[in-house]
Amino acid sequence: MIINLLIFLISGNHELWIRQVENAYCHEHSIAKFHAILALCDSIDDVYIRPIKVQCCDNTAAWVVPVFSWYAKPEDDLQNSLFVGRDSEDAELSNKIWMDNHLCKWPTLQGTAAQYFAKLNEDIVARDYDAPVISFSHFLPRVELIPASDEEMKRVQEERKKSSLPSLDNPRAQGSQVQFNFTRFAGCKTIEEQIRKLGSKVHVHGHQHRNRDRVIDEVRYVSFCLGYPRERSMGVIWGLSGGKGPRQIWPLEDQ
Image (tube, rainbow, N blue to C red; front, side):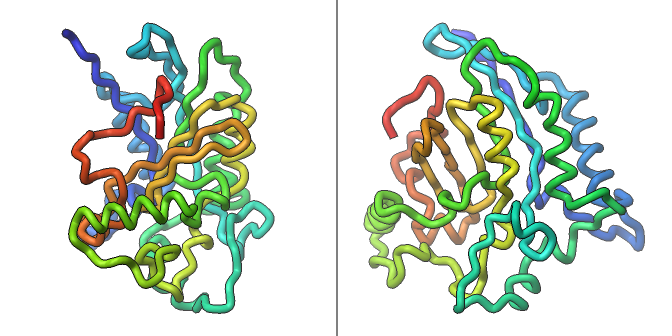
């Protein structure tokens, strides 16, 4: 059997960090680094950063469509942000420990970073697709995907049990810091608007280091992360202990 392996890549926030090397920077700013990554991917066979129609294992076809994105911070664009305020948050701490605030370097943009990346999708959103669309972004499209559902909390508890770990004191937090508010940096509503215009059947996202698999308004949202080694050892990344490998998302299978 010949298996064709196609790699689809989209930049997240870590890829756009600018680090100083021997008193110089490899890239002038994060946008320059982003476009350098796109150019590199374009030069490599079977690495895709633009929509492509693929043949599936059941002899059907589907479009895999990357959605470039960034998060909308509440200070920059509250209306587009997924931010949810809470009394327990230390806003200064949240901004201080978020490394993007230190390592992402932005040129002068017309609007926010989230608006810049959303504009890059205008052509692909306007296209017609003659097969089901599977879209993916690094950042989250909906605020409902941030907190764990009852089912996801149950799966985390089962994952910890398999690793002989005790139950979490706060299952809903799933090991996150109480004073840190991830919703500040989670994603933006424009991603969801573009998903709906695409007519996506499935949307895959990352960024939050917690697994999600749920259907909202006829779109299946999937996040199946590896997480950091510490998170895996904590048993908060469910679905890894069975050794089944990557999750099949199309054709659809049972969750």
